Image (cartoon, rainbow, N blue to C red; front, top):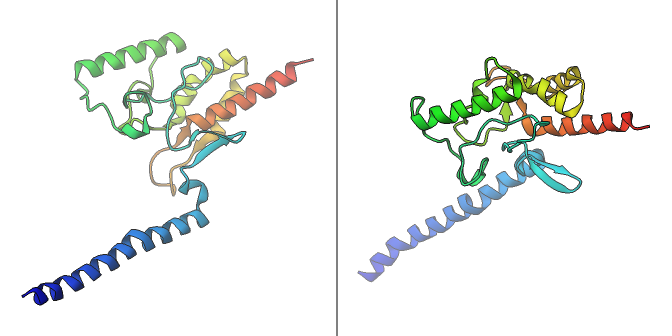
Length: 201
């Protein structure tokens, strides 16, 4: 009886061990090695490094609130915005009073900064992930005049930054044109620094 049980368990245990080694160690190590060899930047989180310090990831949005920066899409994550450990939307429906209040307050703040007129929807509503690092080109252009004014830059030069940072649809089919806000603000900082150096005697 005991021998029969052992004869039944032995191949099952060996199969469990073999599959654990293949699927738990060998396969992940192979895929990780290929990713590190062929796509090291993407495999490591598309990190953006400035002067040896990680400034963020091109895949995760950040909060920019200064008047001289492009503002990101709102984030619904908690306890702080753009919390990658708590990715998700607010789950508030379009007629929910709290959602309507949030949208109205965001729209009012945008109109105070940009004047009356239509407000891009993505600047008043959070994405499903709460981590969206992108805006549409039109939402970035909406902010160009404010950013140029606050930075003392030519608005045409700021618009050129947006054009250069606009990413096309993937494979020409998937998604929409988009602008990475973190990368755009880094370009803006560089442009402003150059303008200050030129203006110095």
